[in-house]
Image (cartoon, rainbow, N blue to C red; front, side):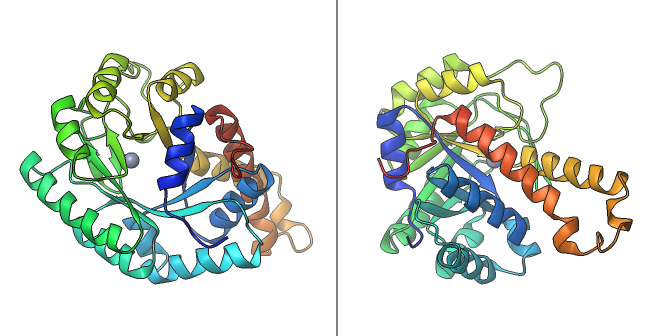
Length: 290
Ligand SMILES: [Zn+2]
């Protein structure tokens, strides 16, 4: 199946009361691991790519070409969306030109007026190309590619203003943060989520910073309208842990254990493991065809 946008995935997730996992990719190994797991579990999947990861992989066109070719060569039949994560205004346009099927335009650091104006433009361009748009209100805490958010709780009135621009998904800060959660974290603000849901109706909501949010909170968030959950840090931690164990066991020094295909294999298995755990938690396993 060629790349799809996130519209149908979101509609089905909302109606079926589950969430689709959006997993960030960094390279070929990451992409292969996530696609293989989604196919094995018959789950729809969103591949998230930050602007930093795009730069790391040398450009939007490289990423789009790799993902499209990999879907073909691996015979992937589950729906896959290629999504720019936390895109800037310019980045979102470049990703759309390169063939991304979905973009997040993160205008949360602009004034609400400017966020509205720019989101509107991106929606127009994206929809003319058949791509979907995620917008953000109220910045998400923690650090993402050097941008430090304070973890604001989004204002429901502003959420409604952005929702009305024809966007397809809305990321609203509800006390969630990127990276690992500190010991004194207050948890998700469900009152805020409830108020956002009441203001925005059927708009699929997106939960960023999915790493380390306890399962009961994830399930409650899904019941309150969250249809897409972003996972990034946890894949990195599983990859690093598996790679470290391999090297600490001295396996890179045995025979041809230094071959990158051997050296990176445990990390790939680590990513597969955490993607499966997350998909189980999000309830999206077996939902590819429904
Ligand atoms: Zn995020």
